[in-house]
Structures are given as structure tokens and as C-alpha cells.
Length: 459
Image (cartoon, rainbow, N blue to C red):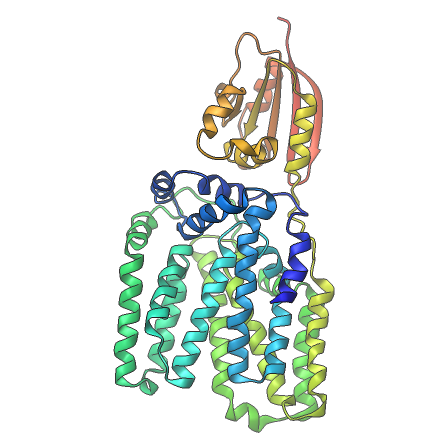
């Protein structure tokens, strides 16, 4: 857990707040009633926003303030992961699994991002530990499992899929569950149902609109499967090294008896890695394209546990067992300690400030980029009164030229175009700006952001 802090804390503010983070920050700064009402109209479960609201009331909305909550969840995630590994292996191998997870590039990034995915992974790992206790120890902590599943669904609606996998798993092992424990499990899921009922109602009310507006995420091809796997192992070398070590460990010892004896444990980790991977891949391919590596972040621990457990079965009683720590090498060598989100909104905001003068109008296209820009332009405006502050400063988030706050006194216009032509082909914003004034300056920033300065035509 200290190692998790050590590899994240120095870099938590080293890259700009961007992508979906400003969305989380904005809603966490609204009053509770308004936040819940608006989130219910979209596809976002509210728990992370509620927790972030409380967290930022103490730590503020600086990059550290908004991201440290996810880091907190990342640190806590090591505990259930360690307990899972130790329950089926030994302390040495449990430490190895924890170390590998800490150096996962995807986990490292999402535990320093002001989004809900770190919270989701943490809750999932505690649930996985509870399921393992049910299976191996015939022990049901019913109240905790009930709370965890309700929290999982309230964090992200993909929790419904995970809960479905849980129920299927319990059906598979039902013969080994005592009658008293069955009643406890029923109580656990009833608690989950009751606590998550408001969010379940919102979920089903929005289910028909999930893909109504389409998406710019591309449908995955089968050729994308190795690409996603490479990301889970940080890069192709990590994938080849770890899979290769699995094969080498078997070739050295050929301990088939251990595999036969413990194959159900291997199947447990395979179940919680291969099955969700297959589901989300085909969901993205057949129903609605999604960001696969983000939605499948929670299966990375299962993949690592599967690999380590296989090597454990081969080398458990061998003197070379300490060589197993070589599994960390490719991950630690390839992890990007300072994440790169390929965005420069901080530099863009400074550039706009250098261009603006009295009687300047600022237009942000498309509209959704407004939160990102304003967070870096004037973070004090993020929160209640957001749009009133923009209007007072002649800043507008637009979909067309008519949305720009221009009046007879406006002398110059600054347009921020964040991939507007790509996402809204056929729009005339740029041409309308050129009709309004002469382009004086242009700046280009990472992530497809272009900033243009126009001076009003004299006529």
C-alpha cells in the first residue's frame, strides 16, 4: 500500500486535468439535489460524484484535491487483492500480485484520474474476496456483500453485469453452500436491491436511450483483441514476457498433478477475467461501442492472479520460486509514472489569456469542451453559477456561430475548436467566423485542439 502511494503521489498533479475529469468536478460542485436530478437524466451513477463532493469540500478542486480520492481507492484496493492471493497462495505470492497490479499502466492512470473507475475496481475486489470466502470457507458476510453490491451499482451501471456474473458463479457452486448461508445470500442481495433501487429505476428508465444518440467510439474488430491485451500488460513485450514465463515455468517443472488438483482455483480466476472480457468485447461489437480498456479495468487483477497462480503451482516448493518476482520486471519497466493523457488544456488557457483584450468574445466548440477549458481558465467558476460567470465574461459554449455572445462592441473573437469538424461534419462555424473577421493568430495543442483569433472586419 505504501508502494502504491510512492509511485502515484509524486505524479498526481503532473499532468493536466482533462478528458472526463472536468465533468466529474463540475457536478461534484453542484448542490446535492440538483446534482442527483441531472445525473439521473444521463448515464452516470451518482456515488462517485457524491463522494467527490465531500472530498473536495476538504481538499479543494486542485488536481491533487480531485484526484487524491481515486488514489485513496487505489491504495485500499491492494488490501483485498492481497487477501485474495494469500487465501489461495502464500504471503510471498500475494505480495507479488500486489506489486504487479501497482505497476499496471492502466491501473496507475485510473487511480490518478478524477473518475469513478478506481472506486469501481476497489469495490469489485472486496466483492471478489467475499465470493472467495463463500466458496472456500463457506463464510457469508451477508451485510458487507449487500452493501458492496449496492455501492458497485451506484458507482457505475456496468455493476449490473458484474452482479450477473456473481449470481451465475453462486449458481455454479450452490451445492457447496449450506442452507443457512443460502438465506444469508438472499438477505445480502435483497439489501443490495433495496439500497440501489432508486439507481436501478433510473437505470431502466434510461436503458432505451443508452445508444440513442450514437457514439464516436469505433466498433472493435477481432484484430483489436491483442491490442487490448497488450494494454493490460502495459505493452507487447510485457504480454510476451509474462505469457512466455508461464510456459517456461511449466516446461521446467511439468507439475501437471498440481494443475489437476488445483484446477478449480485456476478456473475461478479464468472466470473473472475471460468471461467479462468476452462479454464486453461482444457487447461493444454487437450492441454499443465502448472504451474497452476502461470498462474492463476491473478484470486486470483476475488476469494477474491467473498468471501468478499458474506459476505458483509450478514453483511453489522449488528453490527458484523467488525468481517469480521477475514477473514484475516488464510491468515496472513499462509503466508510465507520469501519465500522458495527450491533452494540453492548461497551455491552451494560458494562450487564450495572452490573446484576449477588452471587448473579446470567446467561443468554445463543441460545447462539451467548455468544462475542460474553464477549469484551467478560471477554476473558481466551476460550480454553482457556472453559466452566469461565462455569460458575464462573454464566453460561450457553442454548436453554431449564432450561439456566440457577440455584440456591437466586440472587437475580437477567440474560437477554441476541439475536433469540431471531426465530430460535427458539415458545420459552418469556421466559415462564419472568417466572414465575421480576419484571422490574426492560430495555436495548435495536443488532442486536436486549435485556437483561432479573429479581428472584426471594419465593414
